[in-house]
Length: 348
Image (tube, rainbow, N blue to C red; front, side, top):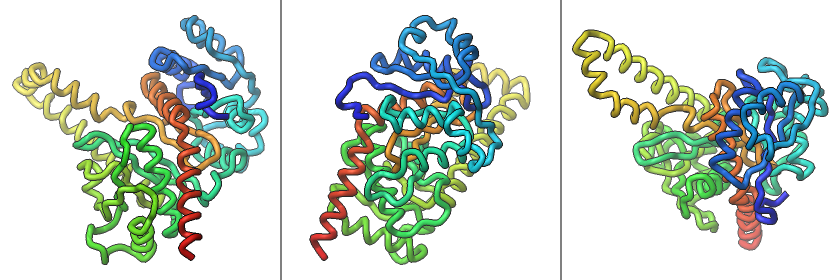
């Protein structure tokens, strides 16, 4: 289903996914409805629960279709068992809507492993893409950065990393609005001779690429939050460890700041005076602000929301799906990969 051919963007929501269920997801959809007047929703789940959650939002009710399902994928469900419920679960039916072309994309806050497994089987990968990757935004000193892979592929070869770069660039153009995103390959050092063979081989592919890509070279872990590049490319093992480390440091700093301002009466007075600045700080690093990771490389838009996301965070995940559908990100990725393969074939 092409978003370009139809100005209305239809998003399928797994209304039963996540820790909070339909109430939070529907409230997030209401926020997204206000932000994006061209969006419409398909709400998958048990009708009585969805209808009850829709009651406070008459405007949303007018642009949402309730799509019944009979089962729910639990947070601890094994992917193999979840696949068996693909024809009856809210998650599986929402994915099927994307496959059938009745929706431009799906957003789910449910089980990540189940979502990846079912989406890979139902949607398959885009032409020329070997493996999908999980991509998301992170805050930096200079704006936001796209990072991938964040856990879908623990072991990657040079071609996988190259494809991640192509997909990450398209994601950055769609979500960040950057005409020519700067791409960096995560490594243990910025020097050309550092890193294992697959990383060095991927760097050579990116250096010699005929696509209009801006590859800046290797970046180190402390460069991720500096904003020196717009896209950070790595394998899923390293990416997931880096992501969790960054999240942990953010939580640690927030805890230290809170403890410091409660340490004395003078500190509490200081907190009162600094409250506007602190509110701005915590808004900037709020994980809900960056909620919404896309499973890039699949033949359909699949966005994973954090299971603990609140309504604001879920609305942001919907926003990611909306922007990617509006931009036609999968069409851009397919065209870039095709152009690359044609150019390399011509050289041979």
